Amino acid sequence: MADQALLADDEVDLSRRKFLTRATIATGALGTVFAAVPFIESWSPSERARAQGAPTELDLAKLEPGQMATPVWRRSPIYVVRRTPDMLARIAGHDGELKDPSSQHSEQPAYARNPLRSRTPEFLVLIGTCTHLGCLPKQRFAQGEIYPSWPGGFFCPCHGSRFDLAGRVFDGSPASVNLKVPPYSFPNPRTLLIGADEKGVT
Image (cartoon, rainbow, N blue to C red; front, side):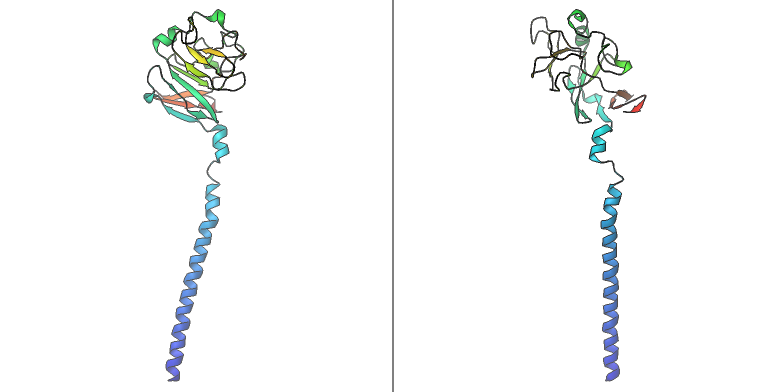
């Protein structure tokens, strides 16, 4: 009888030992997971790091001629306009009405310092904040939309700055320089990469 009681006690102790061992292992594993999550998350770029420089991609195949897309790069709206032949024709002929027609005093990469202010005639890429006080200019692409001789472009509703279809500022506008052109490249014919060019990510 005593032997049976000892055997029963041993079985209880063994099952308790197994239970405690399993519970300890499970707790340790769970603790390891919780400890690892912040460590693994630290490998990913922070939201701040992404906002400060990660390039932005745009699928150009989705942009119809005459349309504008507005992706975001470094927390700034980027105006990407697919210009039509008619829009391109309306860029010439009003240099005398502009503050900086040749973009000598405005900010753009060297490859965009030309009358069209772009790498290719078809696609215009601009930082979509007014160079006066940072408002968002509105697209006014139709000829004559603002006044009879208006060639089309952008109009800032805050203080009335006007920019043509190359982002060049008109005389009489509060803005003193043209809209900025960010660094960008075309990794392939249908992809625009904003924030990276031959110099790398900027």
